[in-house]
Length: 229
Image 1 (cartoon, helix red, strand yellow):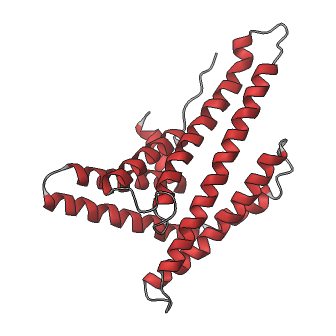
Image 2 (image 1 turned 90 degrees about the horizontal axis):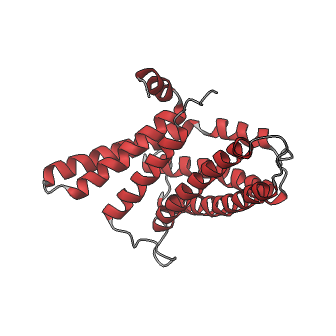
Image 3 (image 1 turned 45 degrees about the vertical axis):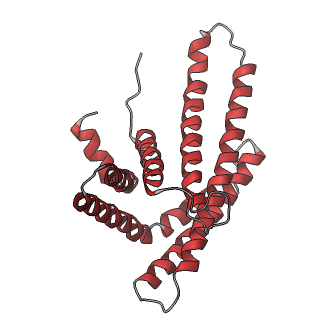
C-alpha cells in the first residue's frame, strides 16, 4: 500500500466516505475507553461532526444512485431470478432512502417546518429492510457459488487454478455478508424501542459495531494489486 494508492483512494467519493465513516466511529469508540471526560467529549464532538459531514455529502447521492438503479433495471443480466428480485427491491429502497433523509436533514436545519424525527425513523426502516434483503441475497449467492464449486469438472487443467476465481468470489461475498450482518445489528438498534434489540445497545457497543463494519468496508473497497503469473 503506497502513498499514491491511498491518495487515489481518497480522491474518490466512495473512498473518502468510507475513510470518514471509519474515523467517525473509531473516535466515538476511543471516547468510551478513555477516562478523561474532556477528551471524551472532544472525541464525541469530532465523531458527530464527521457524521454530519457524511449526511451532508449524501445530498448529492441521489443522481448517482438513480443512474445505478436505471442502469441495473430489472437485472436481466442476473442468472438467478431470486438474486435479481432482491437487487431490484434493494435498489428501490435505497433510492427511496435519500429523499427521506434529505427531508429529515432540511427539517433539522429549519428549512422545512416539520418534525424531523418521523423522517429519521423512516430512514432507519429503509436501512434495516435493505440490509435484511442484502443478507438474503448474500446467503443465496454463496449457496449458488458453492453449488458451482461442487459441480465444477475440470479437464486438462489444474483444479486449484480453476477454483481460484470461485474462491475469490466466495471470500468477497462472505465479507460483504459479514459486514451486512454487523450493520443490521446497528440498524435495528436505531429503530424505536420495542422492536427486537432496538435501543438496547450501549454507546461503546454502537461505536464498536460501527468501527468493525467501517474497517471491513475499507478493506473491501481498497484496491488491491492482483498477482501476475
